[in-house]
Length: 282
Image (cartoon, rainbow, N blue to C red; front, side, top):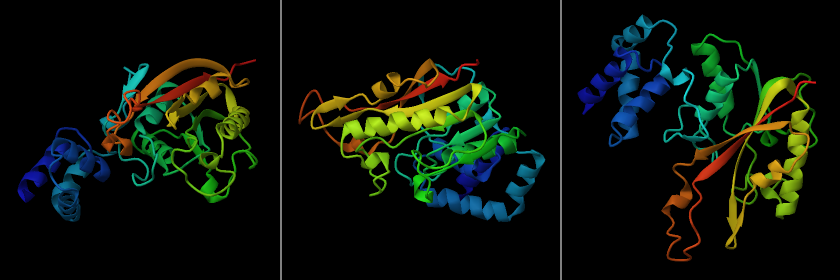
């Protein structure tokens, strides 16, 4: 097993594949999901201290690999079974960085703002784009857990090409007991009010022609279905809706539940929506 994994690691690099430690780890686990994570980490650790991996990585210079290439097949339905190397995977509700990367490259964004950083996915995506594509995308991020309130906090003193907003969903994952936390709202009306106010504020710091992308899912509670995106569709001063991308969800905790035996109408929710708005030029 030890030699097999070592050989696979070198093959991934040798075929112009991943040349960054985390991406090599990801690629190897895709090929060999049955291998324990600690085994892959151990082999990478051994090889990164020796000459085998160092020499291979050095031969590829800047370390560019396919992870950061533009997805020219981006369409209205996307599915990313592997979340990628970005952000803290332990942070509940942390989205995959693939869609963020695709939007940044598609719209050639020079600046990105993330008002709900969470596990740091967007920050890591921008860092990777700058490093491997030799770009200089400016990034800023804020988060309630760092003391910044999206409804009352001071906004950045500049405008951005892309504002990526992945708000906490009402009563799905409670991130704190803070009354300013949208996930902690007592009622749907409170959540909708906070969501509308937050996107109106974010709209102010988007460059004309820039993009506001909001990732949001639906909610089921007490047998009732709540399409949370309707709040955004009815909100004014958000620019022109240009696209709705349906993002398939993977590895949800609810995957383990058998809803069918409880109620045939409890069809599991396995998608989110990314609403893409353009700020109109005057």
